Length: 273
Image (cartoon, rainbow, N blue to C red; front, side, top):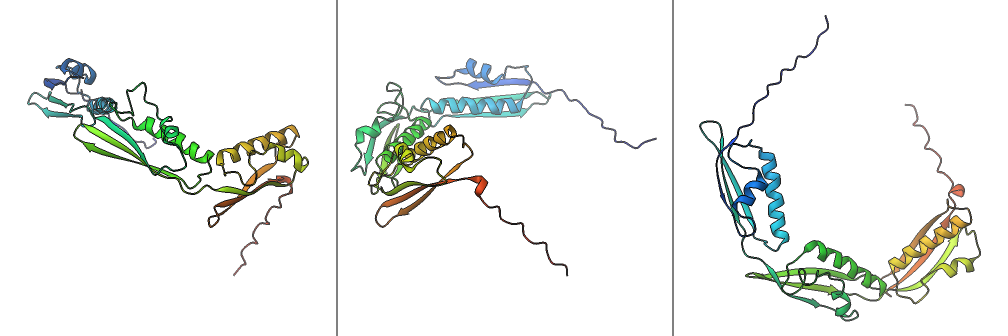
């Protein structure tokens, strides 16, 4: 009657492991690798699971300071259809930090920046510990907050590692830049209270070091004022005009009433040829 597509599925049994040879290490010995990879002789061969587990094991070794660790897994199909497997773990040596240094600091105290680095009681990111990049990135974000608080809007921090054998030296290369100060800082537009009420909310004033964090906090306080006045719909748009020559910035917090914003007229229809 109707035409259709007939789909035939053939289910093939997974091959099993034949001979399994495992060369383990100190952190993961042969029995531990056999269990983690599920590569016992006679068990079903699942290459995707092996690859995924291999990646997790190597990542775990790297996180423990064994940056050179490598885990090779080679399989070969035997005549009987099974898979012979060779697992070889090379942990390498543990790589530890020799020293952490800063260069380029003039306005900020080194102790302030060092205090942002989480060492987990000497286990990571300190002399004798291992390098933890995730925790280091968190520290750099906190350092950026210190820069912001001091008006160093043009500041930059970069890191450089130098390895010598089993030791790594970490350098924080700092470009502080000039202190950027506020020249003008005010609220304008569709105000729902007198200018004085808005001014009391502001954290920044003329000649203060410019701080993005304080600007964001002021926007939040203005939004709360608008909500109390029943005008949660108002939009506050910061208009920031930097003066790089004089290292100053003008900031106008423009209050916009969406109800009064004129919509642009639709474009005219195309002319018929």
